[in-house]
Image (cartoon, rainbow, N blue to C red; front, side, top):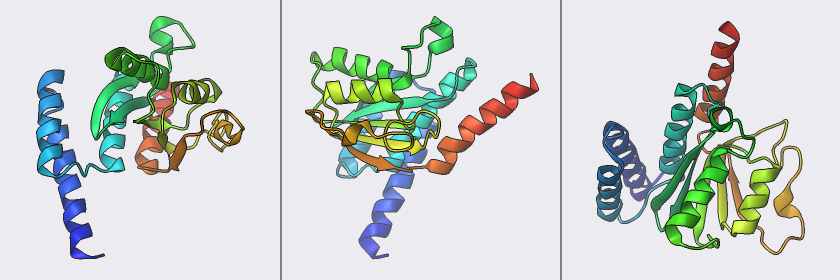
Length: 193
């Protein structure tokens, strides 16, 4: 590993620590702090950094006894929307983390086209969410762990390989261990109840 790579990794770790440290602050303060840090480190935030933010969303879901799946949408190295699973809360099967994050991003940007956006999600998207990703034109999907029961990005089927008018790029396995363990720990604890 060369010196430049080491400096970039150290910078990413510093940024992740700083964001986790201020996680309890309000959204506006966090947003401003992220902008400052991303400027200082020349917009070199890593996939791991954004997946950690998705994991923070998954923790929010676990805190309200929802299956811990979290998502963030990133545009130009800035998180523009957040989402976590709320199916039980709203008694509605459409309230997946990805759908919530996509909906918020569309509202924020004032368009349904999210062409220059990336979606970070802790669990491989299901067919419904993969369809929403295709329809919203998200450019890249980054997920943590595979969903061997209903994953639609390669585990069960790959909707992104079909001949739709849009095919996002996919990156798999970012923080796989953490994304997998938050799910397995949640279900272990649920079975103990």
